[in-house]
Length: 79
Image 1 (cartoon, one colour):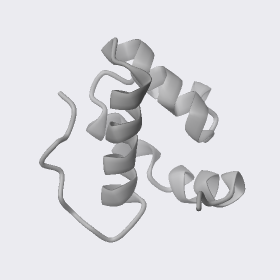
Image 2 (tube, helix red, strand yellow):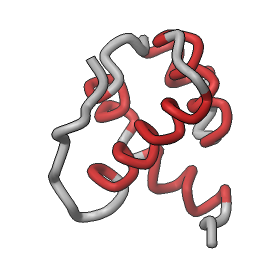
Image 3 (cartoon, rainbow, N blue to C red):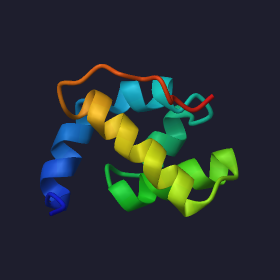
């Protein structure tokens, strides 16, 4: 079950800088324009990397696992 948008936004707000590091092609403006909304950020990732929604979704899940949970594995980090 997906967590609420509000809960995701709150957790993401603390990890915005990590999103820029993890998704190296995203700019500060890209992250700010996403306004903490998961779907908006997913769209920015697709746009910047030219990837499918499925690939962007997988990367997002890996980011969430690494930075919005307690695990530290980043073996499939996007370039």
